[in-house]
Length: 363
Image (cartoon, rainbow, N blue to C red; front, side, top):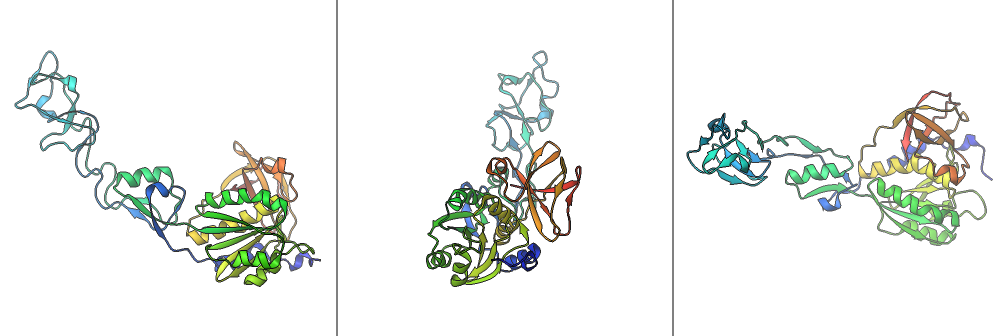
């Protein structure tokens, strides 16, 4: 039987312990095609102007705009020499500062005028030297790939955390593992799943095996006679915390094996997701060096009640500017799957009244 809640480790203390175990993983360089969704290891800045010189934005004739000022079908302007044809993206020849559409030329005469710079892009108009395309710790999005490729980069340094999800024998935990893997990958990491029976020795071997930067143990985290995960973690390394002042998620634990952090998650869906949001996501951020996005805010549609002394995760759904609380501990799956975020109620609060502006962690 577990001791009273007074013996549970506060969430802030548990988070500090977990972060102390998590050093950023070594960076590696990957092609841009493999970088989407990963975390940038270093800042990336432009070294030279993009484009490097005046270029054409459309196919046409490179001309000096001043030389054909006022040209029209009724007042054609004879050109001293045939203009050079340029394709979109090509540099304009010396002396040219605009691109005349092909229909603007009849024989050697211009029958339309163009302004200086028309149909072109100036040197450095896209990017100037020193422009930062990607910050260290930033998640690499498709728009970053466009900028990097345009600036001539073909690869980028990332930090990709390898997570092993050890699924113990409970069927509920097995149903949860695809969700955990997806959450890890959304955070910029990679995940492998290892299923093992409820045997401490076999769970311990799965925890201690090489090839991962951190381990998530799913299920068997309680204090009952059939719960083996905490015992297995103690055998594989060190069990530092077992029992958190977090609702749901009271049976979660923290430890390490071979210098790698280990997070013990309950097998119940609401509790597992709560622990991942409160501890798993910050762990992944510490390992990858990522900058966690600022939480969204919104006004509560209904009140949230909470127990003083416990941090509490309340799952919510956004409805325009309003935040609808769905519930926390023991929330049925049909309600849990409606959630698109969660509110963390600190231990010193009894909750929030309707209309309160709250921070929402996206799910």
